[in-house]
Image (tube, rainbow, N blue to C red):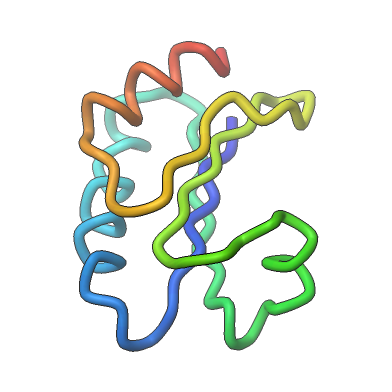
Length: 86
């Protein structure tokens, strides 16, 4: 399972989202977190339909998107979504 976090440099909620996602690999075996700054990875952000930061996308191993949150999600939201991806 992959958790992708789209961020931007001056985004205060991005710090909160980053902190939440940092906890996930310790709680969910096989979870991989990837952070993408929209300024440096604009083509990927556009392809994923990112309109604001932070945005979190969780995908199953087969690439199916199972969760998307704009804004900083709670740890509980992320864990429930992660369970759907397993």
